[in-house]
Image (cartoon, rainbow, N blue to C red; front, top):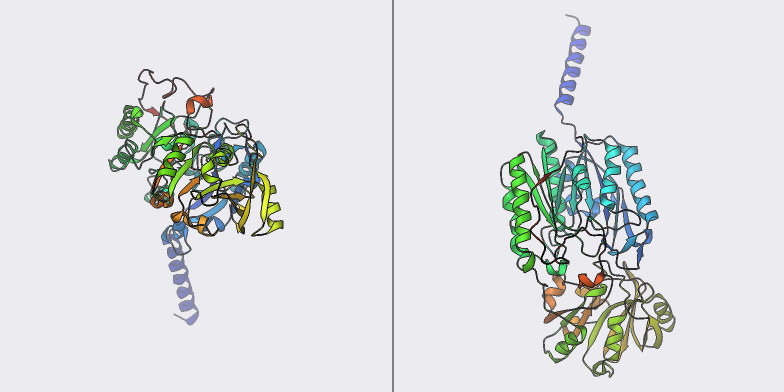
Length: 519
């Protein structure tokens, strides 16, 4: 055999080895990522436009999810294609133009970068959009038209979201938070991703069965917290069901109480490969929910504003936190209702500088802030704030006092001003902002732990405020997310519905098997 023959055989062998290596190398699945996230009240006059949303695109989407770090296992398990993630602080109804711009961008990017093996869709479920009753169902239907029925979609949601048959049909895997407050938000999103990858890598493909059950109960999150019973025990029933053979996941949605559309109700889903076990799991959770519907109570004592203030002033526990619930921006309130602040300004206890110390967080007042910036810290200001959006209960309030602090650069408020009025420290913002963390106050030179009363526009307290509290009351105040659901005046929800129809007969809670996307 001459040298040329040896070389030819060697080259041929190397080509064969290379070819085999390529065949053995597993091709990564191509998975898209998209998100649309807002909770929006139909009872607020506010409107949420593009400027209300923080928009992430491309690789910056990975930075939002801790489990998608550059060196993370999940990052390496697929060829990820992030498109758009748009998220806003809860607010008023989303303008149609804003929604259409986001939906179009997501769909266009899917068209440009497809085909896809799968998709991770991160949505809240409680958006309200002008002219659309089921925005999330509409969005996923548009997505499905682009990615096709072979693409596996895994959807993660907030438990205060709403779930329609259309959303379940086009979601091959669907799950939601199991804790309120939502301390498991990232855990839930990770579960949605790992369930998706497991079905892809195992070759099992899409779950064969999906069960959906609407539960005719509509309660606010402040009554359905998992910190207390019956929510705590109800949600603890979910995980054991997912350990059963043939069940992949199950979920309970409380629904969004401040949206007025046919889809607004509590919901249960389950999915997996055993029709019998999936149906049993869903029915067990739905019946469990219905059985405890009358046991839900507010997560903390509630009272009128006057009753709350009277108790707080007499208390020696610091800080005594009062939730100004009716205009909670993290539930969809406009955030600029002045009714509570106007009542505070009338109280004689706070008119003198040596009265009980109180922090009020917060009231938007862009013109007030502009004037304060011109005057500077230490100056005396007299100007109006609030009620630019929601003036139904009270008009703008006149604040006269010393400018204690001006802070620029907040990612939500942009500019914050602390003005001392009597013994009150009122935080006025350029743009509405919820105050959830101790640093929100200390950044402004305020010490909430040493303050007699801290009043925040919130419902149930987020963990940091909850752990800081000396005592706590939730005040029944007016606004776009009024806790008195009956007086809000729902007109379009499906009736009968508890608690609107308190003596309604037991509903049909049998499992509705939802067809797969290609059926």
